Length: 79
Image: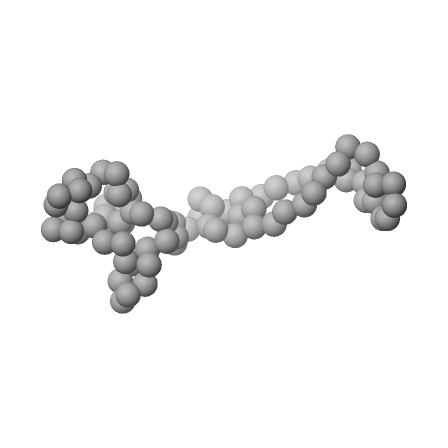
């Protein structure tokens, strides 16, 4: 799931001299990445068995005939 970790914070080991500082007592992280299939992947095709075949696994001379595409279908990039 792409949304796991889709945030950012800047942490320092001391309070800022000018402005508001917040103290963090505890950080708890939960990931649900194992609960759904991968929905976004770059440079790979999803095979019938659910595994991914990356661009490096294709022969550069036969990639198109083997089914490698830079598009996820309907003209959409396969990111």
